[in-house]
Length: 133
Image 1 (cartoon, helix red, strand yellow):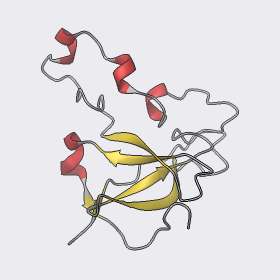
Image 2 (cartoon, helix red, strand yellow):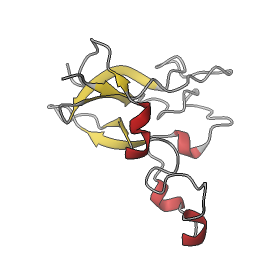
Image 3 (cartoon, one colour):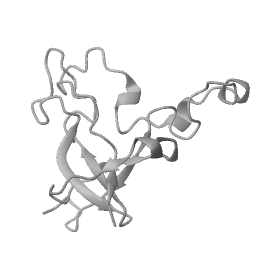
């Protein structure tokens, strides 16, 4: 069975990129998820925006793994209007799902695809370390 994943997020290429992920927004770790998906682990330092953690100049809240679309949903009329973004992920194409390694010292955020992004999934490349390994 071919495992699938979302393509990597577009990196941040502006000034003061995150020193931990070099603007990639993800840590470089990948995790098997539900036996069919391989998901990225968001960068713990920047939270997924790719910018330096001390500044976050110009970043959008929705770029961060801890932004919850449910807290920002518009009225039902706007939500159900033709051309409105996906009501589940608000157009991001992914959900942030919390995960803990076996030692439970750190909480990680996994970049799990939303159903609306199923057409964007690609075969997962081999390799990548699991969280906690």
